[in-house]
Each structure stands twice: as C-alpha cells, then as structure tokens.
Image (cartoon, rainbow, N blue to C red; front, side, top):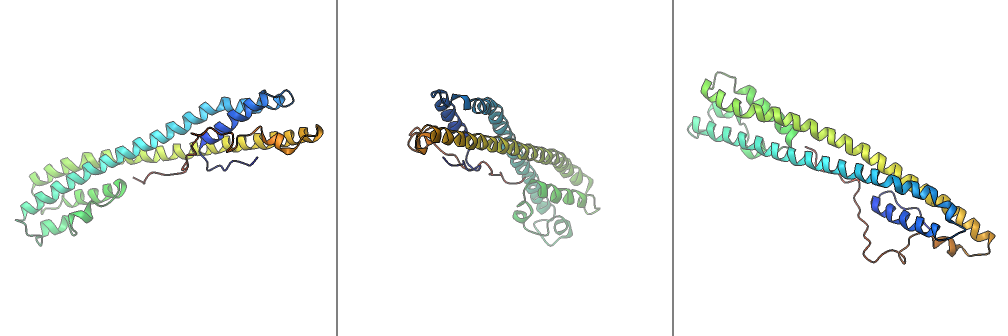
Length: 230
C-alpha cells in the first residue's frame, strides 16, 4: 500500500476510500477501523463541490475576460480605421501618429488587464486639441464604457483566482487527511496480520490496487492547472 500522490485527481482518493471502507466493513477484525474513512467520505461531497464550483467560477471569469478583451479590441480597430480616414490614409500625420505609433496588431495584442491600460492611454490622448469634439465624443463614448467594464471583469478574474487558490488548499488538506487515515489503518492492519499469523498481503487487500480497480477507472491529472491570466 502506497501513499497516493497529492497531485492525483480528487476522485482517485475518493475511489480508494470507497474501496477501503467497504473492505474494512466486510471484515469483522478490521471494521472498527472504518469510522475515520466514513467521515472522510462524508466530507467528500463538500470538497468536490468546492473544487467544481471554483473551477467553474475561474473558467467563467476567464471567458468574460476573453470577450471583454475582444470587444475592446474591436473598438480600438474602429478608432484606428476612423483615424486613418481622418488623415486620408497618411500615417505620418500627427493625428494618427499620436494615437497609433505601432501597427494595430501590436496595439491589440495584450490580455485584458494590459489592454485596458493601452486603451485608457489612447482615450487620454483623444482629449488633445488635435481632434474635433465630434471625433472625441464618438470614440471616447465607445471606449470608456468598455474600459470600465473591463476593469470590473479584471476584478472578477482576481476574485475567482483567489477562490480557486483557497479551494486548492481545502482539497489538499482533505487529500492529506485521506492519506493519513490510509497509512494509519495500514499500520493497524499489518499489526493485526502479525498477531494472527497472516502475511502482509492480507493488509494490502484492504486497499485499491491496479488488480482490484475497475477496468474503466481513469486518473485525471492536472488539479493545479491555471487558466491564462486576464
């Protein structure tokens, strides 16, 4: 019987504990060891819900950030095209060079947090006397709400990431407790085997192994994967 690597998926631990509890309860000499296993299994649904809810929250926040970034990029492209029209396609004109010193692809290449900063800088430049009031009003009116919305989304992403970090700590604590229970019970089972003249294999039989696991059992790795930062 080996300690389960904490990087293994939480369902791997659950499967092992389900097997372990059932095996203990099936043996009169070992069933007194089942109580802590049962308690850990009772806690599993709460842990799984925390795990899935925070994963979902992080994915949803990442999705909103992706769309907010796309909307902001669209608005910057519209400004780029409008500015080109304003200067008659002459990119050397100050009205154009002030807003776009690089190609548009370099201006909109950033993730949301940095893209907001770029857009806010451009909005600040639109206040210059180089631009007519109508031009300013149109494009500031388009960009500023998207900037404000983007800032809200960035905060949501941070909150979701924090919640996910806290959930990982909770899940890791549950996994560590599961391992501690398994190791303690294994020691007790080995002791029982010694007292009753059995081999160590008797103790091993109370734990899930490759031979006893269902054929469709899967090990999902990647509990610690992070989505891209907004």
